[in-house]
Length: 453
Image (cartoon, rainbow, N blue to C red):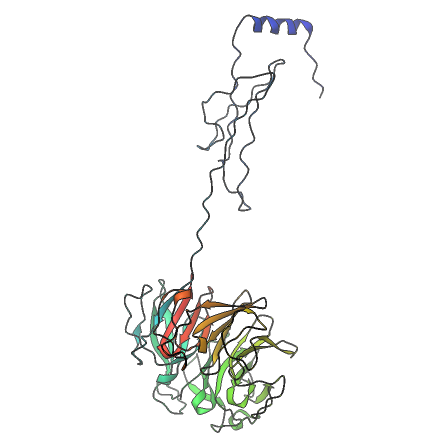
């Protein structure tokens, strides 16, 4: 809409008012309705309110609204006068957003959940407090495999005690340790899980649909199941004789089966000294077949050399930690085998590019876990550290890499605290909780450790 200029009479009247020395009425700027520096819904600081400019009074203007701001931190304080109007320049108020404190990143820390290094035993009860001031009563003896069940309990293959232990966490994160199955060393199925027998169990997997637990009964060369419905323990596959025979479960053979992964009704098994990954049809016949590997002592490319650790990601790629070559292999869903990280046949310690990185898995084996972001975690037992593999790079995730006897790869008793300073002794298995916390079976320290911020 076009504004009609003032008539000569109106202009003359305005001039008389100005010449009379009467003060002009100060205008009061409208207070902002948003505090300076308030976060927008996008998580960014909104810009401060624009500068306030007085309007020249050569022509009459409408007064701004004087409605009060609901915010005590408005751009201009309530009741303060407006800058004097000027026809030649604009007076501005320059409010500044209050600085927003940047959250301090929380350091990665390692703590002991249960167990005491110098006290291997099968005692049940509370684990350690989060600050480590109270070690609790629970004791373990060479924990060698980990898996979470559908209810968030952490299961442990307590190899030295020939038992499967169960850790249930309270709201503060403290564990209560009990025995799920097992008793003395032996080979016995039983409807009473506490009368069943295992011999150095070294692998675990859980069926999240029904909470059944699968156990690699390493010393008995068998695969067993613990039924969630009644606790009964029975063998699914393995005759008890060492070998790599395929076929019906009871007639098949393994040679020191260890890590397990369950995928669509197929239980994949690291048959370590057969140089194979085997498959057990646990959803049907329990028949055993070869997933990858040729068996025997001569392993052709892309065969396996003492597969020890096993993990699977959301894209159905399988990862195998090889004790014999200190490498991590990847088998994609189409069956293509590549070396993900490590220098084949060369043990050592080197971070950096995955192809030239070095691990030391030869003496004690290794464990694997896959994070929700695709990071592959490796329990590098010989280097007494936890490594991380992501985007073709290898880093040390936790552990100071110090030894009581480096030549024998004997680490130190558990040193808790900052991840970079933590002490391990043959970390051999990993599991990741729903919240992303990484748990470690610190085998020769007889402990379960927790790594989190």
